[in-house]
Length: 118
Image: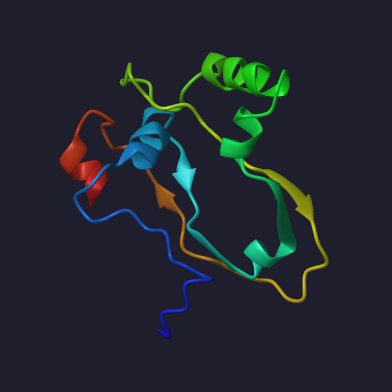
């Protein structure tokens, strides 16, 4: 890897939070791992969420809307709100998408943090 900061790899540390797996296991979902390269180049950031919050009139509405949305984690009370930037599509040069083998989570107990972290 070249270490290019423009294209960071976001991956939770092993043994860390397993919220995605726990939520998927709760609904007996089958997860299909996916990797996409070039997708970040397909969108331009119009305004960052932090800047959106500071806008007169709109900022208060945005805060109220994001705080009223249901959280994805069913067992956490003090979860942070989902905050997304405003994006606009751009002309993508190239996108590569790779799908992995499906993982059946119907036999995984979502309360078992160690199994969900594997």
